[in-house]
Length: 253
Image 1: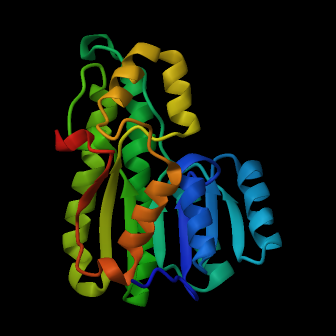
Image 2: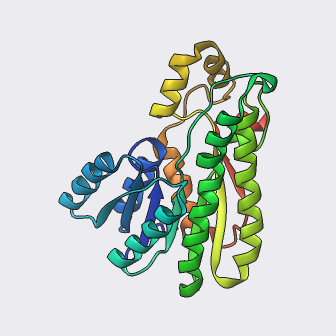
């Protein structure tokens, strides 16, 4: 199976840590030029500098992915630097503390949906404008097992993640015949800084979630990265509008 991305350009949001970082590193190791996008530009820049020192092509872009002007500029900067955009992993996201729906707030609803759903739409919009010109491309959106199931106390988060899958499926149908493939991944509990913070804040809730992963452990960011690269590769050329669970068997029960 060909997982080489030589001569290709990859864009990764939320690239300064966790799944985004692992995926950006995997793209670089596979030969792609990588745009590392993160709200924390300083952290992304340190990683990009490290990649360049190792012989890879990489740039760092600071971006608030909920801001349309910044997202437009982000894609433009990537294309200016590398000439094209072949793959994108729309990964930036936030968690939300468990709370009953009746006790949730409109402010939290707006915050979570802006970062976890609106940003995916914005990123796809400007990535697709470029890929449509090229007549080719592959996009992977980061949903969650929360896009496939419900869990008490997680209504706002799961609503946004279900929305990501709806965006993915509909956009995939629009562009399937034009050389552009769009899919989603649905990670379970992965060993990232975000999950570590959730375990610290809600130890009992998170213990139950991780315990219910039949594999018996947290996932690794590198395992998510492998799934993203496969979905972006020619080996997944017939995979369109799919939501791939990378969850240690959680949703297979």
